[in-house]
Length: 407
Image 1: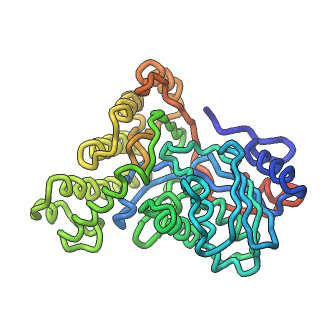
Image 2: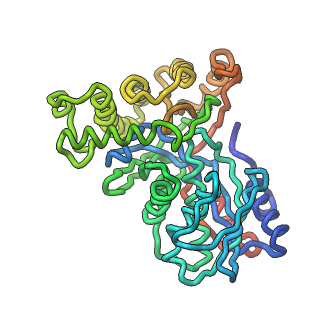
Image 3: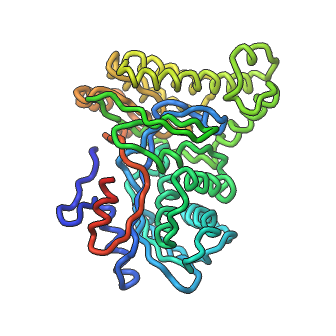
């Protein structure tokens, strides 16, 4: 599966055109703002973000799109095309009520709530939302939604002050404080500040980012195991608590500050020890992988990605047998010309392979022959490129939105 084509008339992909049409049909007027924000794939550095460590994600050319317009009654009217045209209406407030059952509505409510103190010049909004970031796949569909919402609301309010890092923090706060997932900052920051043809080395303590060029002639092949995952209902929060327990025992602010010597000298419960070992060694792998990318050293990158997957499987225990099988197939294909590993929070989802483009047909054949989900289904494959971060533009005759699509 490749990136969707764009319209010759508007320069927009079909998903963007669909939110514009649906907005106009629902409200009788065209939207005044069109926003988009990408999903992300993490090349290496799993669960290191909330330990103040290092991560190496890339924004991908799969986006959530939001068409938006102002209201004057203090309400938000939201329509989600991907949720069987489900809608929601609630007061624009810093403390909105939770929606019974949560779901996408709580993501919208909680995200906008973080921005309310900055929305001085707006009194409600209409929103239509759709996207092509696969949900439940570990590609940050929720972060993509949050950044698209924040950019849309920011543009509606005429507020140019908040930058990508600040918006990423607000999106993280929505997950932590409202949705109930104690995630780190990686997903949101990658969506906010992605760069075409580059990965993004993120220091999750300082939020410093550094663009790292991807080797010429490579592609991002993302294979979905079809094992769906849910962070709030999984052991994600348990893993975070175990990492915090290890940091306290080692006397450091976060596991980013710990070393293997410190860990080996401590007497920790086995599970806590292994969780900490994954984080400490994963941080080292991220920095080494960054250097391998800079040098175009694909064999070294492949070694580091394989070691990362093994650490997630054995020490952090967040893979599944299906995901392990998927990673093994892709690692075999990549050989010395790339690497593969599970990507995302774990407990299902996707594997990422960075490999030479000429290996894509071989990879597709190997996946068809060598992988089936627990239900007997083949992997879903997305061929992606590294894309730009979130932005919003005024929607008038379509010209600004064409810039938004290609920026």
